[in-house]
Image (cartoon, rainbow, N blue to C red; front, side, top):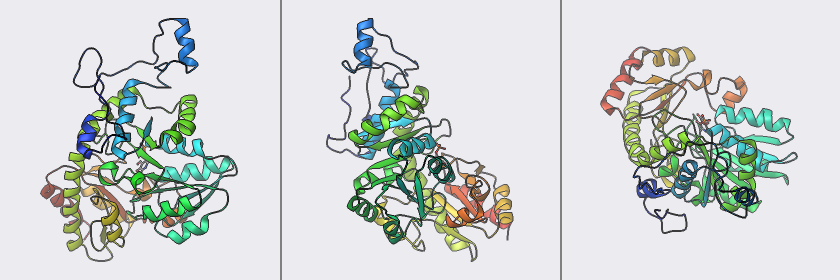
Length: 400
Ligand SMILES: Cc1ncc(COP(=O)(O)O)c(C=O)c1O
């Protein structure tokens, strides 16, 4: 068996880690990882079954508990995020729901950024509220609002940075400091950055969430998610919830995602290059009230923070096009960009958040989250950037 890279071994580069962490071979000596597409595992005897169930012997029992293909993916993500442990889930939303239900109980208080993915706001305000968990939503970048929201019952801070889709940022070190002063868990959705661009655990967060559906797969094939953190937090709180309720990652999806991670840093670099070029082109081109939002532009309100906290500025950018009609016409005129609700794909994708991903929020909640009717989200892909820019140009011409 290859020796896996553990979080405790000297850190290697992110590309090396993505290729070598979580590598295990069976006696067949395969180079590409084996796929353990099985729901259960066989016991040599009734006594072995008893020992495994009692935890006296280590090993696989049932794929809702553990599975080698899933474990390899978990090991790799944990190493990339510089965490001790990762647990994989069926989707990003399964990771977020699992996180909330693993750590929060009736009477607890959750402080949630106002700028999070629409379904995250929805489950907080419906499911969690129904279970007696109190929620406060605060402006992501306003540290003072986070401080003022704290009560003796506050158990968790939850946020995305950069946020979907507004690209507003949180100062992770400052929030981590505030959270630790009050013994609050800081959980960060790191979907837009991936560990290639930002590692929240190194900045003081305790828990990182991923929708692996996005950049980790990168090719729009499978759903998946993960929660990363310390061995103690994950095994004490998250594992029992996952094992007993079952929103686990399928071995097949884990195998696809594991291979996706191998090219993640290469894709991220190129997609960041392309996004930077598109953002600079559009910044020079668009006249108010139209605008482009991208953390890599010096015009972005939090550019200095982005430069400090992120290794690069990511591959998502947003256009403000003034109205829903303009946004829809622009989207419908694009020829290369695919209209879809996903992001992080090798192809350039376009979404109108106000009528799709954030469509179920009330107009007030959308406004608070910064999701205007004229906002268009672009997830820049690997096409030749001149072609992407030409496509955007011809679509802009249709609304000017
Ligand atoms: C930032 C962010 N977090 C979480 C999710 C949910 O992930 P999934 O669709 O894999 O459930 C999404 C989905 O778009 C997202 O954009």
